[in-house]
Amino acid sequence: TVGGALGAGAILPIGPETCPLGESLRIANWLAAETAGQCGPCKLGLPAAAGGLSDVLNGGGPAALEALREVAQAVKGRGACKHPDGSARFFMSTLSAFTDDLAAHVLDGGCGRETLGVLPLPFSGHQDVEESIPSGEKL
Figure 1 (cartoon, helix red, strand yellow):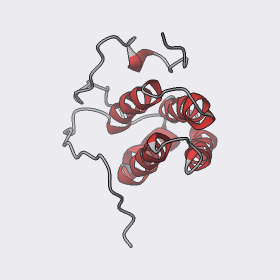
Figure 2 (cartoon, one colour; figure 1 turned 180 degrees about the vertical axis):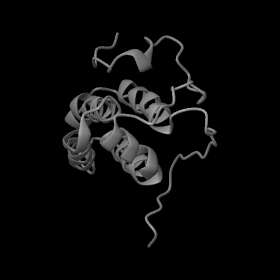
Figure 3 (tube, one colour; figure 1 turned 30 degrees about the vertical axis):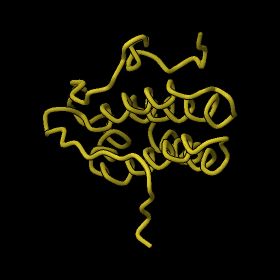
Figure 4 (cartoon, helix red, strand yellow; figure 1 turned 45 degrees about the vertical axis):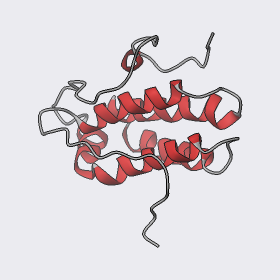
């Protein structure tokens, strides 16, 4: 009744010195890169959502925010597995948890904090995920 679901989840305090939306973008890019690439929501939707979050952070304004919400909603319930569903929940949770930072990015062009990369993400064998949106190509 409160919107919870069984599955993986994490709570990690990140501190006031880093941009929480930038940290979320690192996770979004990682989620988009960690798909099997077997269905449209993973192959197209998650990279588009990560790109949408990047657009929001880089001054895309209200239109970028609305596009991100639409993409996150579009992948829910359409994948061959639950990865796109969980990723969509992550995107929506990011938007609801960091409303002040989101407003600063959407309305004022940024929050004034750098993304320090404080979240521990396993990047072995991956390109610098925070540097680019995943291409979907895998060996």
